[in-house]
Amino acid sequence: MKKNVKKKAILLVLDSAGIGALPDAALYGDQGANTLGRIAEAMPSLELPYLNGLGLHFLVPQFVQRKKAVLKNPCYVGRMAECSNGKDTITGHWELMGILTEEPSPTFPNGFPEPLLEQIAERTGVTFLGNEVASGTEIIQRLGATHVQTGKPILYTSADSVLQIAAHEDILPVPQLYRLCAAIREITSSGPYKVGRVIARPFIGQEGAYQRTTNRHDFALPVPSPNLLESLLQQKKQVLSVGKIGDIFSGIHFTQAVHTSDNGDGMEQTSKLYQQLDEGLLFVNLVDFDMKYGHRRDIWGYGHALASFDEALGQLLTEIDDETIVIITADHGCDPGYQGTDHTREYVPLLIYGKGIRANQCIAERNSFADLAATLAQYFSVVYAAAGNSFAEEVFL
Image (cartoon, rainbow, N blue to C red):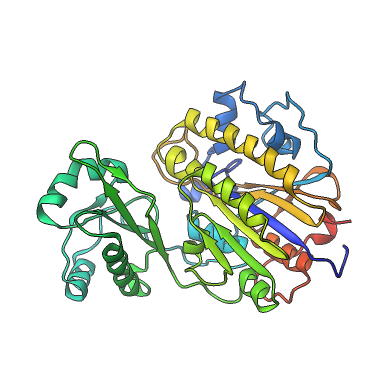
């Protein structure tokens, strides 16, 4: 690897883009899950020239490389297994930065227990509607009018470790909703109710036509040390984030964080922030794959979203310079053809592109997402003390 140059990396997390069940998937009820494989089988004519050009078709053989993208550099192709216990957003993203989770955050399939609701009411003076496992888009249609009439926010959860609060922006303004969620985050930061994320879910509109807005905000658990982001900042590298990355890491360890409205906006913001990147990491989450299509079990919507991303990826690859690597991976699976609506315990792709990459089409396998963090630490030549084993010598010339 070249030294004494200003290196840059763009890490694109395709939220939920798993590529096949892990060996321990049965422990999570996910045996046979395969997010991208399922999409490829259902949409055999789907064209992904840039993803396949980077080697995705080696990992998901159902994707046929019809149109060959013209790429100037080779790509390292592999897959990674999740080492942490869990299959949620925080667990996956944290492991990508070198943080291993031994005990998964609790879920609440029967809603939240009364003692927790009493603590929240005592702390905030607020009582809620709902308190059930529900789809966010469905529950605001069902309870939205009652919320508007009573002023009571809507509380719900999902198969993930989340506590979500929905409120109409005209009834509970966004800053007040954020303060309520921040208070709940403090209550649930330890003990038996230690949920992974408290999520503010504002909406607008009239009865029968309520719509969630882009003012969503995730209040995650405090980020453990050490981790790669911390190492990069300590050694004067930039750390820029796009999408919900800033929320997942509690808003710390970033020189700049930009929220987005959808995947298209995410790729546009990635291109803009890249122009400001002098040396360091640009960390991107594209949430639509998971939120709009995986959880809603929309195979064709997921596939079309992949095609749109592929087109944007092709443009991005024309913009990067010779000191930049682009990494494509995921944080877990969410098989849109599988049972239920939960995440699925899967391998994730690992595609690394840029000048100076060793061509490797052997489908290398890593035992932990944290290996990527250790590899990036070596790539940036920073001191690193978190989890993972670097494979930089396999990747870089």
